[in-house]
Image (cartoon, rainbow, N blue to C red; front, side, top):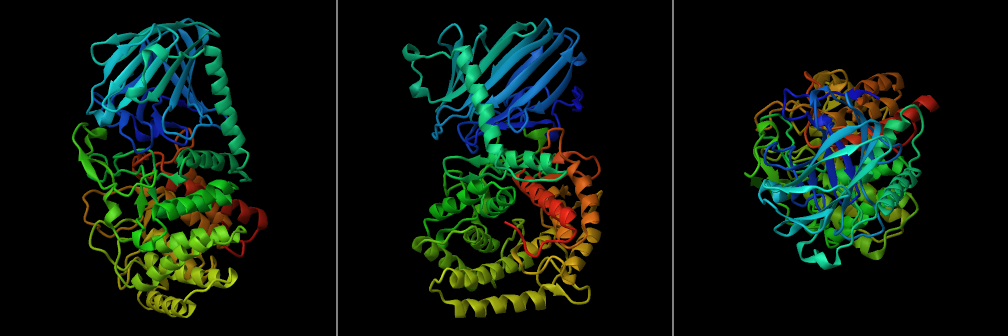
Length: 620
């Protein structure tokens, strides 16, 4: 297990220095030095309680540090096998201690009572540690009111948010709206810290129940057992199985248990260009990303998670394609437009910071195809749409038939003028093609004659305006020469076979023209109107791996996969992008799209290497 060295010359750790913990409701990022520096409670898209990752001075954190000679301490960390329980080891002149961090998972499906447990245990020597709990609610805007409720419990209240802070060793309130104290641990000794999200009106000093350490330890063990029990559903095999299991666990952590929504990432405003303006909020459920997640869960053997999002989308759209949005809040909320924050400085001065996402107002035609494909895969797993579901499916396909010829913002949420993106057109074709097949296989009435006519029109437009006959490749948008890594997805919805020469030629051209070195790819090179050169997109490289593996080029796919998989941090977590020059991870973290593409690539590669030839059809 590699050591993680402290970086005292830079007050902001790199994005890859963080670990994820969560409970399928909310999440937190823990730094390599065992400080919780990002946490939104009680949901992924709630206001932050700790946000030091976006402002070292005003964001708030929960830290555990050696009391002396801090520069001389070394840090090692790992996830307990098949869990999201994080163990950080601190080794220094006085001895060694471990910190175990996790969200407790129980049977409750309510957003109240989210609990983070931090268990400090002595391993060697007698070690003194400084504990500091400094929440700042609502993205640094609300300084909390700290009160002592008992010898071991404090309340921290700000607006409509509150934390109960319990520690079995006595801590003290500080004037700077925080709680802190110095503790000492010896070998085998444990000190437990519990942070519980609560509602201010429910805090009652007279009815306060403090946890028993033994009961807390039991809840910790139950949580560890819960993760291990869930991980048994992961069926990935082969040499990359362990890494793919970590990606599946990460995706599971990004699901919202009460609704089935899958967030794109648990963070907002981590920059795609450090110091630049490409800072967005990813704590929402995108139709596209969640459909991709469903496919990745299915190929990994996690069928329940693969099916959960389908019901969430139908509910959120109220069963009407007219009301479909490209993203939703994790509870199905529709009003999630962006606003800018001025209460924090931003990660390494990257501004503006945003909460909410204005992509909600874009037309992204691929959403129709992704949803119909989601329902198609569900059908192929042995289900048939209900009458209500079928009416929704018909409305989706009708919209694809009526709107396919319009320009849209596409898979990358193009910030400039809408265009006729080939990937979007292919997804409209896929919605129509899958709809025709669904109607036949499920024996449902549908306007299939009209759908066939529209499907053929879309196909003709793609082949005449989206295919460069001179080069024998597909292009980013109609009548343009530019390339786009999203074209690597065409075989996943069976527009082309994996080994079709047009697909292989397109993949070769993308590797040449969008190459960022060492297996990395840019998503496109065409100027999009935003300043700054973004990094390489990790998902695109994994899409390339799947294309190569299923196209009969397993050896080449292995080379690319190994190069790109090595870009994960020491815990196996991927960001959205990577700086090709420095190797630094960029963007919101960890990024679901990177992890799901990693699973798809690992499965495709395992199948290609074990069978010696690509499978006949796309899985999932």
